[in-house]
Length: 352
Image (cartoon, rainbow, N blue to C red; front, side, top):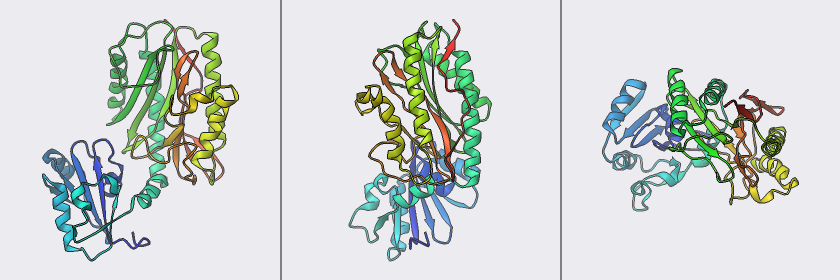
């Protein structure tokens, strides 16, 4: 803040995306809306519109001023009015209630999103250690997923077993989606009542959190023996992911990583399946949010730096077998990449 000439910083968070708020206040919001007002001298006030959240913040945080207000925007605005002549900024500014950014206010809020994004992307050693532990937990969780996957089980029963395992390990949060079936499956979603069947491809994305930091793993299994077409398709995904990981090093861009993955699909005549018609991203950042910057896409020119943590995953639809996934979390090092997840890169087969 001193280097950027910022005297006061407003950070927003909600139950879905709370990484900006947590970075400033070290509080993981679970419901409602929150605003942190961070001063240049290091003092921080946390404004919450949920009485339950305010009570929890009082118990779980230290060194913060906790403020419960039904209208957090007006409460924070009153504080900003007192320092209207100071250089004030916000992140992410586009998420703020309109009341705070209205041009009729006596103060103005510059956009500090890029500044905070840079801090969120570049991890300190202690943050990386939390991500290592989360990655190890993701590996354990996938072993539980494989053991729990069997014909006749509903998707939600499978997910419930994995969630129970994570909670038993003290993991308070896990983002998880899955898919099961064949060529009819075009992606992954929250679990449904669909029951697994022999021959299904079963995909999942597990993202457990440790100390608020999320690490992710993506894998695909087959109920029964994998067919030759399924194995051949999987090898393409493995080649694409390994090409992406091999390209990781400081100075290359997110676009370079995405292009390395996509070029493998293009080599086999499947270039259409790396477009947004069939897929979203080729990976993304990891940290205090499950889907952080930078997004790995061919039009994202964010350069990688040592200390960034990302997942490389060429997840997309395959016209012969359906949607397949494969992804590993890694930390960018001075010379390349250190892969954090250890689960074998294979098409798992579950006996039926």
